[in-house]
Image 1 (cartoon, rainbow, N blue to C red):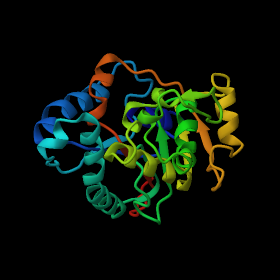
Image 2: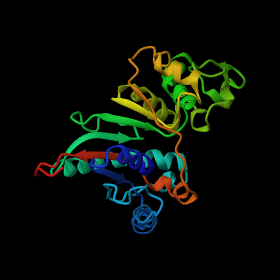
Image 3: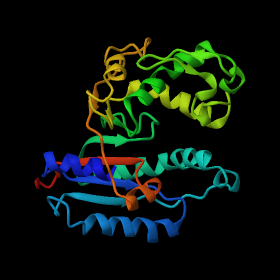
Image 4: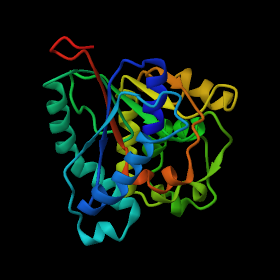
Length: 258
């Protein structure tokens, strides 16, 4: 989200942006997040070191031990528990600014029906095509992908895929991770737009299938914005999980300032 915020600021330098930070323990806020924020603030390679990017740390979350031991379930639980905190943060920001758009990588719509919500899909267009078509495959396939072994699944935008080659969190039908991702995939088309970390020439087949609406046969495909690929340093990659699944853009302060 930080790299996306920096890119937006390069094109809209007067547009204030607030990035919402999620943490599962107070120590993450004090150590990991602080270190990364300081790195961004003092980055000598920024073309504009005064980019209007601020950070809003959400209250710490307390996870059950069973979730902590499973990285995927931990991430899902953090996103679920963060919803009330995100709503409160948006309300707080709205008291001094007009929120023009809300960008998130965690789909729990609507956060606020008055604020246009965009989804930032950080992976490639082929993965996006898979997820957009996942609800259709789900309705056609009552068994777990794990049990289908070498049965071939036909997605749009890329070659056929064996059921056993599906992403690990999707292998067990009815599991908490599978349930989350099917719900996630079903809500993607309901956003105001999807921002992808790719570009047209890199994945023409997948992008065409998405843009044509073929991946979402029962719903209108929202606008797709290709802005990648992004590349970040080792430090940013190491601490990416503690940041950003959520970001908000604000401008037009009600006191008249720009």
